[in-house]
Length: 617
Ligand SMILES: Cc1cc2nc3c(=O)[nH]c(=O)nc-3n(C[C@H](O)[C@H](O)[C@H](O)COP(=O)(O)OP(=O)(O)OC[C@H]3O[C@@H](n4cnc5c(N)ncnc54)[C@H](O)[C@@H]3O)c2cc1C
Image 1: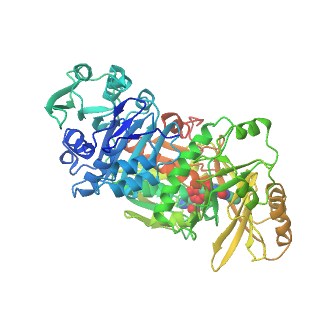
Image 2: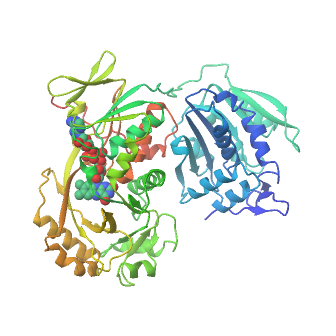
Image 3: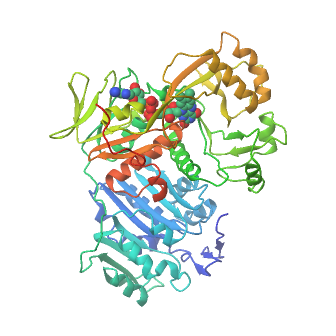
């Protein structure tokens, strides 16, 4: 549920909850520019910087974000990356964001773009991506205390916004200012519209040097300042970040290509090496895959991770792929033929509509030929994607070179950083930074034992014939069925997939087709009846591949040694995880705000469960 906004007759937005106005009817943009941008000496202060990170308390109707984004867009000296990190316990609706920006033609198109990504803001952190990944909004839906307890990052500017300190004191407490100070480097600028004595005293106590300046009517004054404590703050471990230079990525599947794109966006010169003679030579050569969040009764870690991942992939697919051809954002129906009672109780208690997952409606069940009693969920953000198309789109980004037919044997330290060597000890490349994204080969390449498993899988597929009545969207559950995928001039359905733990052989198997058919029988009985003859016909095709998985089914992302990073173990969810993991890797490397909550980021850390001994090499 969105937070209601009351629009007064003169256009002033007011919060019934706090009994306070968000801003005056005309003063929103002026306040953003004068008090916040001006108070933090922007845009001048960010000129020529590689990145700029703004931390804001109180997102409200988003005008400070939109004004900062506008200033960034209009500035030829803009930083390569603008991070805007904000928080709000009471998120307003997309319609109110639009309405708030409507009087300002410079902001209205930006507000439209923001509103498009403004869905599913459940408690926790959400990363919204604009300007091809150069403007990143990290929004924490929750209270200020939890928001500021996330992994600190060095902010360059702090906007203290929010309702009046007397009406919403939690935003203006000493504890909040101390947490903000933990995000500041010496020189971080701060600005706020209030000059309340208590606010000033507490900010000064936390190390801010403040100056009262001319306010914007009806306020006489506003406040600006700089973090410059008279002491050396204890226990400060804010990572300064690295300077982008030369990077080598091994593996051009989803994981490697996504990492290359995230790093190139930050200014790295990236070369991606692959043993294959075309990109997406491994598991990412899967003809088409499913994108959908994982549903669990207790909304477990994996469910929360997959929501962040699906959001990250959707943003990339929308920006880079051709809808209907390379991907389809159709929604996905999840069918559970034998759900445990807890699952059924949970579904019965769910709202009938939700941006992420809700009970499937009668029309959706009917379209999948399922009866009214079938246990079925609807994931509106799901769909299908052709992985190789996404890989190619990422590799085509500026700053990336791809080199195929290059089998790398290992990464080892050298004087200048890292050296990639082939089996004859020839130098493939030297680089300041190496990212290994080579599936199960990653352990061997890194000379580090990583807990990786091979899981072979087979997909059965065939061209669709016009007589077949198939659902208009993918269906998952135990296995999946993806209809309506354009393949050349034809349309095809895909059904899978098998799980052969510890197996790596790529030869198609008759028994696996049978297994896929049996699974389809439970998932979509009416579709199975229509396709059973296809499974014994010569037109049936197979695609086989090997997944690389960790023991807990979560990816492994992190730095093994200074300058040597891994991004692998995408398991059965490369489409869900690759983009998110790439942004997490880049954020950790650069000391940026993380794209997801601290606890979720830790759940992807490559250090987890890693034995501390090197792999035999
Ligand atoms: C049957 C099946 C069905 C699946 N269905 C789905 C699905 O519906 N949805 C979904 O999201 N995911 C699905 N997946 C999983 C998805 O395919 C993977 O998670 C994803 O492709 C992994 O990407 P990656 O980049 O980590 O690995 P890969 O795509 O395997 O890339 C690794 C790359 O490293 C290269 N490489 C390896 N060793 C070396 C070396 N020594 N030197 C140079 N290069 C090297 C390889 O050539 C390869 O190109 C499925 C997988 C299978 C097998």
